[in-house]
Image (cartoon, rainbow, N blue to C red; front, side, top):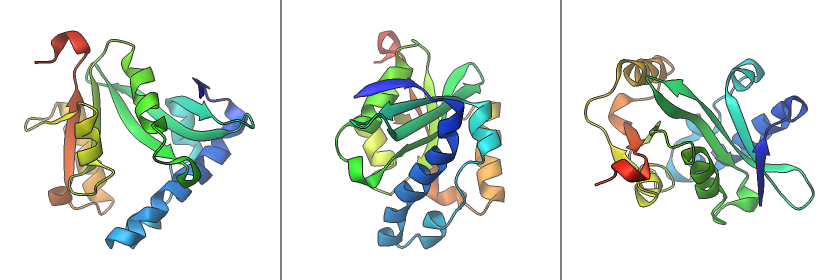
Length: 162
């Protein structure tokens, strides 16, 4: 699987990947998440976006990251359902992690392919959030995401892990 920076012309297609990857939320009683709008083209363009490219040379997954309080924050990671459960999401995270910086993200606490999945990749829940991470969580709450269902997580660089 080739991982490379997204090309500007691919950004609209990445929104389709995000929308498709939200569909499984219907199966866990969260249709409002499945119906949520994907990242805007403007937001995608503001982030560093890496894509995993399939056999036809077309992106099948992406990760959008940016700097938040000195860490690389995963604003969005999406894998098209037709390519799910193949390690592509983990490969994208590993690719970004190679910068040697701490990674952070926010996710659903109890959805199996969210916090439990990230824990298997080495992320840990944080109890005290940095100012920027706290602001992201406040913004999520303002969009209707219940803070009780959300968790901030961190993946320390390999040399800092216990």
